[in-house]
Length: 213
Image (cartoon, rainbow, N blue to C red; front, side, top):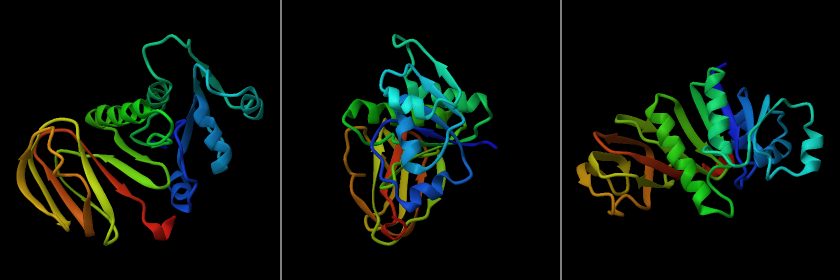
């Protein structure tokens, strides 16, 4: 199976939609992200990290899960190590859970950067915490299913060109936007939306369907 979920240590909401997103997926935990395995009722096939944020009691409860242990002083994050482990096992689709929330803004930002990096390498990346989705945008056109009234934003990580948004309250048609523009903040879907991007790097962020929460 080439579909993997990485459990990270950020906040989650264990909604039915999140549980469904994990169904049938191979799972790897990154350090303190193992705590979500208990909440979601799953057992990862691998646990990686330096284990500086995993309490001893948690380690005891998951003692049977194979580990890959790394030094605390390293040049890759635990999440990055977990993603690389998934790819080494054949991952083509990766869902990051616990990537968007938590007490440290830098961690959420880092996970968005990682999602963009691996998406550029051809991995189908997504982030979901039970409340909010995030998807790196591909160049070209893509359709995203949304319920009418869903709030969404495009987070830019570069200048954008050839950006069109159809099916939204505030559509755009082949515009160029500098990185510092906030024009793509806080839009609303009328139903499924279609986004076309010719050049640049951005992430679509949108709220989960309340009916599936």
